[in-house]
Image (cartoon, rainbow over all chains, first blue to last red; front, side, top):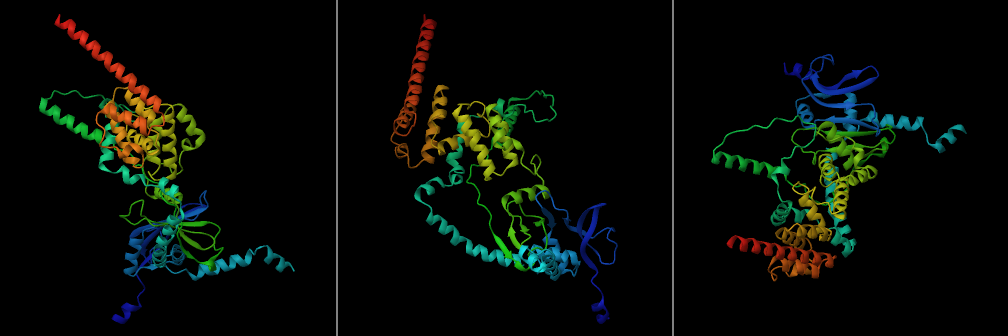
Amino acid sequence: MSFRKSRTLPSMAIRFVRLGCTNRPFYHIVVMNIRANQHEEPIEQVGSYDPLPNVNNEKLVALNFDRIRYWMANGARFSKPLEELLGLAGFLPLHPRTVLNAWRNRLNKPDEEGKNENKE
Amino acid sequence: MLCRTCAFIFKRQLPSVVYLRKNLSGKELQQDERDPGKYFFDDKVQALMKKLTRMDLEKVFRIRKEGQKLETPEYKFMTTEDLENEMEKMMEKADRLLQMPPFVKEREEINTILANDKHIQGFETSKFVFTDISYGSSDRDRVIVVREPNGILRKANWEERNRMNQIYFERIGRKIKPPPMFEDKYLRDLLERKEYVFTLDRACIQFEPDDRDFIRVRNAVYDHANENKEFESLRSTRHFGPLAFYLAWKNQIDFLLIDLIDGDRLDEAVSLIELYQVLQPSSKIAGKKDQIKGDIEIIKAYAELSSLRRQDVEMAIKNYSQRQFHNIGEDDQAMAQLNS
């Protein structure tokens, strides 16, 4: 019995829900049943994320860290995109995917010297 | 968690930086950098400013054109006791309405870098701003951090903090972007039209009292009012106490003093000089606090020792005593007529 229980997946996920409309994404960060559809009613909303930069070139993220800690302690699992975001916030360690993306971006957009080298 | 460790380390490093700055700055700078907040919240100073405000209930409860619906006044029959109670309540309300916006030092810039992760340089082209929206923290101590595209994680500066606080914890009447009326060009126009109370009230809503912009706008309004001797429009509002404080702080109380003497308010003039003595402990008059007695004597002593416009102040006193003399003369004549 105990063996089975330990093999079960965590029942809750902290994840994004895509709101907004066509071509204008906006995300709520919610705690919900891991198998539920994103548009079902969540257990609790713990934040929001606006992925389009504003006039000051900022992407705004709001997070209720108290509640996120609480749900973490209750065994909730983060979705990968959220894990990346929390890594950037300094709440979790930096996600490997952030590092990888940064590396790829640097390769694709090398500075002037790098370009010259490639041409030669 | 990473955040917290970094913050702890920086907190420990911070005092040494402050110490260094204090030691490097010269004596003159230190004089200028006195914290007005220490004096402002002192009970005695508060009492003096309250007295100078000269509470006028008609003006405190004036109808303000703020777009609200006006209600028809209600008339009631009351016993004397009820009336007294009601008056007491209204006095309390007036006190609350006249609560003065704090006069404090400009807050220090936030330049705390929490982490510098060079290996994620270029992960994004825009900044990320993270706001902690947990319950129970105030606008002042809320954690707001920024991740720059070059991998630096730092605390948000005041401008960013203001914006985030207004976005997630809105205050009624405050705008995310400060309105253009506080830009120098438009502010000058407002001042020329003498919209002092309007400008100051709006600034109180928009900015925190230790914001650089608030201090700039407030000082501009007070300077303009002082230069044009326009004290009447500010009197009996919550901005008059800080005006007197500002003038005493900047050693420019002469115009206000003359205005008070011309209005036959010697008691207030003496209060103003008392305020000056408290705020300028190094001035000559401050040392002679208890030696001088009599209202006119104190003002004369001030004019002699510390005033920058000695002749004007002395002229005002002269005019005042002449007026008093004439008044007494008239009174005597009236009495004589009555007796006869």
